[in-house]
Amino acid sequence: RKRTAHERAKELFASGEFSSGRKWADDAPKEKLDTNTVNLIASGACGAFVHGLEDEMFEVRIAAVEALCQLARSSPSFAEKCLDFLVDMFNDEIEEVRLQSIHVLREISTHITLREDQLDTVLAVLEDSSRDIREALHELLCYTNVSTKECIQLALLELLKNLNKYPTDRNSVWKCLTFLGSRHPTLVLPLVPELLSTHPYFDTPEPDMDDPAYIAVLVLVFNAAKSCPTMPALFSDHTFRHYAYLRDSLSHLVPPLRLPGRKQVYSLDSVDSGCGSGSVESAKLFLQQSLNRISTIQNLETTGAQDLLNFTIRDLQRLGELQTELAGAADFCATYLRCQLLLMKALQEKLWNMAVPLCLKQNVTATAAAQQILEETYKLEFLYSSLESRQVATIHHVRLQAKALQLILTARSGPGLDLLISICEKFLQEIECFQRMFLTELPHLQDSFVDKLLELMPRLLSCKPVELVKILQTTLRQSGLLQLRLPEQINRATATIIEPTGESDNPLRFTSGLVVALDIDATLEHVQDPQDKVKVQVLYPDGQSHVIHPKPADFRKPGPNRHRLITQVYLSHTAWTEPSQVEVRLLLAYSSSSSSPSSANKSGWSDSIDSLPPAEAAVEGTIPFSKPVKVYIMPKPARR
Image (cartoon, rainbow, N blue to C red):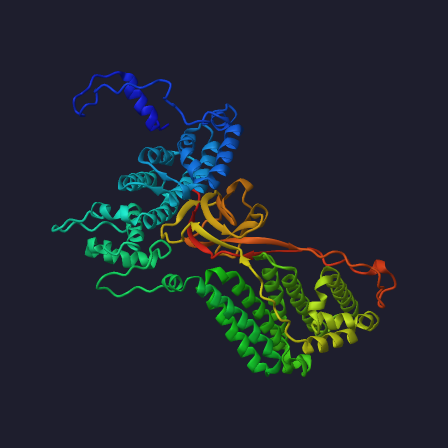
């Protein structure tokens, strides 16, 4: 527990020591005070808040901290007054209270500036054994204003101690120092010679670039140098080389700098920041124009239409890389257009004008295309959030086209009559199901594939399976591309695996038949209900695959639309002769279910409704949504 400045002053006063003589007039008599005019505490301070913060029930203390936060957010003057009380709550014996007070201080950090004694109390929490507490404090330091260069020095020293004691906090500490440097460039400037161990005329030894503590110092200095043009003059030659190395290896932590007498480093960040919000507006305009250009595809020949789709998909993918704000919408549109391109290739003239034995290869290609379209539609529906009903209807429309293509290809391969009848009945039920689910969206689907099928529905219900397949084939080839309406805001679910990094050449060795624990640390963005949907997949070199469902307690929520997964995965295998790599990735599970179709229309092919096949069952699957990380392992044979 860290004592407050008030407690330390009180202890000194209570000790009643004689003057040491080191401080001038520290024992001089104080002026006479009128006891009636002395106000020991601010008026109203010992009200509900102080009683709440000192209550014996920790739930009451948490509620008091949250109430302080609500009031402090709307009143900067009150935020300053309650700062001491909130900092004192960092010493609470209950972890939840400490964590809540850290979160509250983070929320009101724009209104306050920490004094050195307050920062001292705050930084004492870095020795906490709880990872959640330490990372919450790193997040708090990112947005905290400090008053002096001694505060910066103190914060850096404590963060380096934290890094030494808990090496797994490396990424969190580096990110914290990124913000600390960029927010206080003028305070970092006088510390640079000391931090980099430079000397006016002596050469100092070059530090080790593999040292996380040295990288932490460089991250602080380089981020401060972005807003302080005089700082690079204090760098030594090896610091410039280290900057070039870190700019490539840790570009998300090290900003582009204008270095004197050196080649200017340009990056996507500097291009974007120069354009500001105008670039986002122009990117939105470009996205809309790209979708409008696709509407002219009906007037082009097949080759020209495919080229236009290819170019547009390439442009949208590049746009998503350049503009992170529009990455979700650009990827969504590109994936939708890829589905249309696959459908267009599968419906080429030569495939349908030839007998089946003469175009087996094309038939296999079309079957693979139909399956790929189905997979892409599930990605469109479940990997992107904030979709409107119009977009969901468009996705289901493409899925219906892919299922129609699958039915036609199955019919061409010559299945038995009973099988063909059941497939056709199931497809008709899916059309009815689509009509019920998207009744309000049908006016927007004029002249589309499903619109034409609904017009022909009475005929489809009464005709033979072979005739239905012919009608489907004609309708599918005549239906045009359904225009995608640009969504307002679409976010793509993404995951980044922080640990393991996949960079180690030292294999994890363990005895075959036993297990080894692999620590997984990942950040999740825009994932709804991750406790139910996120899974970890381990793929072994022999093709075996294990899917692990993490415990709900392994998920944290550090911010809105952001989750953190910290878990352990147990690996096991039989003995190998040499080390090899296993792949670890995160999967997003989904379940697609349709409501049961009404049995109002009796099929002409069956004698009773009871013989109709059931509605489409829930389709369950998983979508990989993180880059795979490779980990070296080596199962050793057991000793006899």
